[in-house]
Image 1 (tube, rainbow, N blue to C red):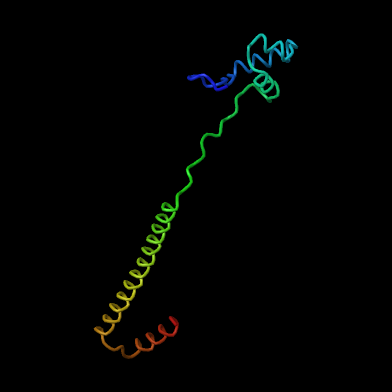
Image 2: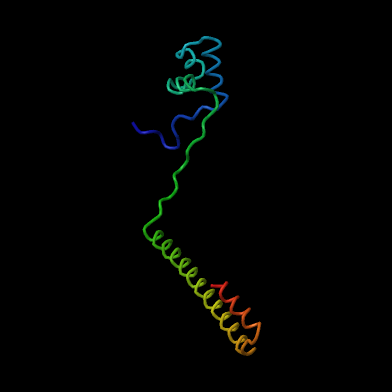
Length: 131
């Protein structure tokens, strides 16, 4: 027989209700049947309240997270690829700027002219230690 419209079934016991059941059972030594007659709670509610470690109500897990759809996964992969491509382009531009700096240094050395005398020996020695 279906449930009447507008009813939601049995309510969950509050912390106070669970504490009442535990007090009646453990301290006043009432049976589960006597507690059911006093409180009008179901057998399951009473049994569950008695067997629980405490009267506190545990956290409910809630609704699980929505699973990503195939399209969302593809979009995520595309965005990941785009960011990795940007990183590659950035490293290429860094290399280009380094080579530009090296070219500028070579041009400055050519403008200064050939090195003569003792400075030539020092320049050769500096070149040997650099390599």
